[in-house]
Image (cartoon, rainbow, N blue to C red; front, side, top):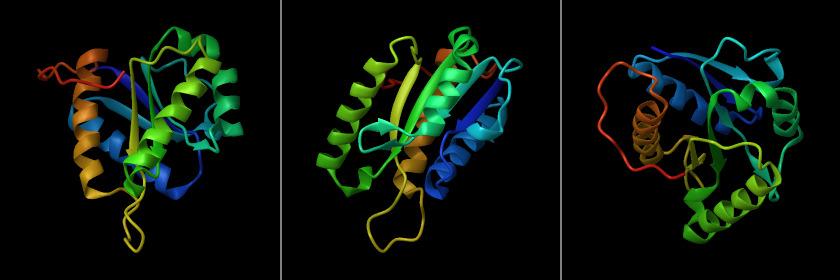
Length: 166
């Protein structure tokens, strides 16, 4: 079993709820997981893998995300890293594609970071809904975590190979 840190690099409730779903899914797959806010982390030395949840705001990383990446750059280079972006994807395909384009642009700015997996998750239902993590996204999170544990070798449990977005 590997030791994994799920980092929520934003304090927005909806994004942290997505991070919590990811942490719970990994625990179901026998992965030791800690879930922390990026501002509360002083060292990532004890973790084998780091999963970072970072929101894009107008096509840019938030300051807290940039600070976390800068502070932990050397140690992130020595670990498996995955990245998820909470985005308003429930608004439709156009918003989803726009979010992907923004993410690709941002990844070009931090070429040193080479995540094993990257994914966009919708962090809110359509207007008028209560949950911050839509039911459909929960199954997408489960599938992503399954492929993530397989690609990072984070569990002794046999998991089927799942296609993942890289």
